[in-house]
Amino acid sequence: MASRRANHEGSLYQRSSDARWIGAVRLGRGPDGRAVRKYVSGTSRSEVAKKLKVLQRQFDDGQLPRDFHVTLSTLFERWFEDVMRHQVEANTLNNYRSIVRHHIVPALGNVLIVNLNANDVDRLLSLKRDSGLATSTVRRIRTVLAQCLQQGIRWGLLFRNVATLSRAPKSSRAEGRTLTPDEARRFLAAIEGHRHEALFALMLCTGLRRGEALGLMWKDLDRDAGVIRVARQLKREGGRLITTDTKTFRSRRAINLPAPMLSTMLAHERRQSLERAQSAERWSDTGFIFTNTRGTPIDPRNFYREFRLICDAASLGHWHPHELRHSAASLMLAQGVKLHVVSQVLGHSSIRMTSDVYGHLLEPDREEAASAMGALLWSNEPGASK
Image (cartoon, rainbow, N blue to C red; front, side, top):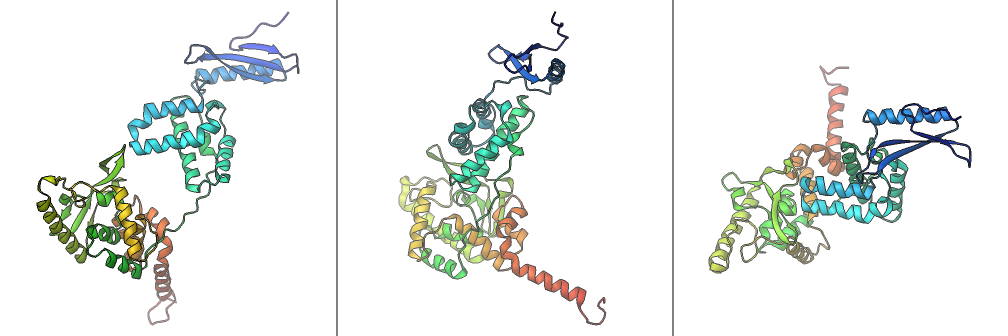
């Protein structure tokens, strides 16, 4: 006679094909109302019975997920709908969706999240690197996956985040190009008299991001103090131009303008006032510092086209507007401006970020520090320690 099953042993039987013992225990019900069963196996009945008891105890103590039928694709859908669309801007959400749709779901979308392991993630990242994707894109794939799985843990669907157990691709930060002092002066000469001279000059001397510069309003300029306050950014979203908060909290900042730059800004203001008077009813008084001929904000795409034309006129070749920001930082550091000040002017989230990007430009400062310590500690002058 078969022995009676003890409490919490679940279903036990011996498989005829290989004589292994198989056990199954019911761990609640899934979203569809059907029973959720978990299976274990072993070489003896007692071994399997012990495994079933451990499973049941872990489930009762809340140490096992209560839904074993959620696929990674389903988890992403829930995450986007119930969390992310309330947490991030539309552009960021669309970017996340694109990463998931093109890179994660095709490879892992049908995998049950409880069966997902670090090897699956490492294999995915390796395939993406081999396909030629940039390291930054592959790292973003891993980051998005990790954030989603972390939400699964908060919901009690998972108890470990296998994406964080995977190995992130080694990041190789490429140094951004910067204008030399001579090239910068050629750029300024090329924009002299241009309708947007003040805009391009401001970006070069302050390192403003394109959206920050285009989002400036006249109320942000303190003419007496010569200070411009950065409080918003202009961008295209959903086919229309909108203003949003700056990229980070530290991006909200005040920047002192060089005297020539302030003069250029005031000349721009006089030119804009003349345009407003000449346009009469066709002018929209939006309050933006940099506008098109109707007074409305400048489309970032039009800005980019104008920038390329100016670079061609200055015989500089092909440059991206963001490289004005790199140029501003590099030129400030070359003039001896301290790293923490450059970080504040750029609106970086931390001085470490500034150091990571521009630390290679600080070699003269490091040499100066070495010379100073050498003079202090090894000087043979009277009164020095020996």
